[in-house]
Amino acid sequence: MINLATGMVRRVDSLGRIVIPKEIRKVLKIKENEQVEINVSNDSIILNRYSNIDKYDIALANLISVIENVKEKYIFFTDLSSIVLTPYKYQELKGKFISPYLSHLIDTRSDVLETEPISLTLINDKEAITVAYNIKTIIKNGDTVGLLIMLSENNITKEDLEIFKIMELFLDKYLE
Image (cartoon, rainbow, N blue to C red; front, side, top):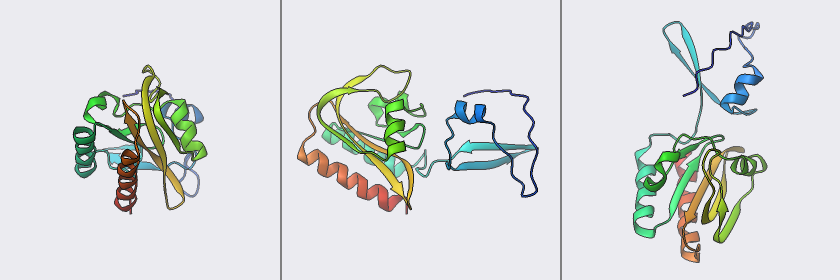
């Protein structure tokens, strides 16, 4: 958890808007056009990064677990700045900020398939891992919402790509 006391003061305009200072947006990795969730607690307004992928969703977590146990493939979901859902093996990565490489894929709406193990960095403060991977940008209603990632310690096969496609279709329906 980041605790940032800035002492910054901002004026509310006639439409009720305030500007979140650039320094704070940078620290919290809030990007242009990203949605924020607004909550009220006592006399405080609390802003949180918002994710279309519910961070505590049991159905998605169970599906990830089944794929991990049956196929030994590891499925991740990210929002625009952090890892939202992880397989059990990588649970320590949940909530961590994604690497610049993954951020670049989101910004450029790029998809990547590496069928043989190669170096990949998922988060900033973690070493690269050697895995085969398939990464798909999740776009809903024209907006990028994150990434769907499949990792494999072995090669990614045609059958694995079919499982990934099922995950893609499930996620598309899920986010409706």
